Image 1 (cartoon, rainbow, N blue to C red):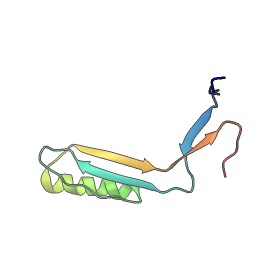
Image 2 (spheres, rainbow, N blue to C red; image 1 turned 180 degrees about the vertical axis):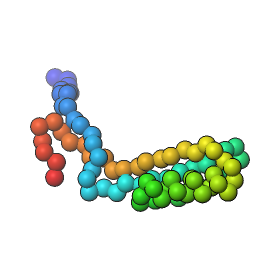
Image 3 (cartoon, helix red, strand yellow; image 1 turned 90 degrees about the vertical axis):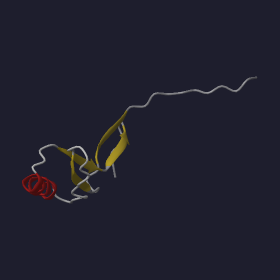
Image 4 (cartoon, one colour; image 1 turned 90 degrees about the horizontal axis):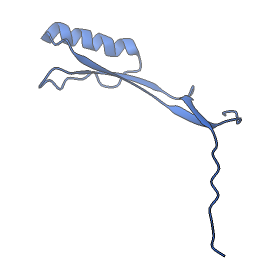
Length: 80
């Protein structure tokens, strides 16, 4: 007899993990400028950095990055 695998589809959801950190950062997107805010714990801190950088350099284009922790849970099973 040949062994065979049985696969079963199980629904999962992914959402922000309430106990996880959130990090914000801004990066100057002007050509040849590698300035960046570094990771910040508050969105306003990254935005303030971008505003200061724009005021000092005249650079107007920035990339904003938001990073969080996500938790995957199986449908019908409550998180921790």
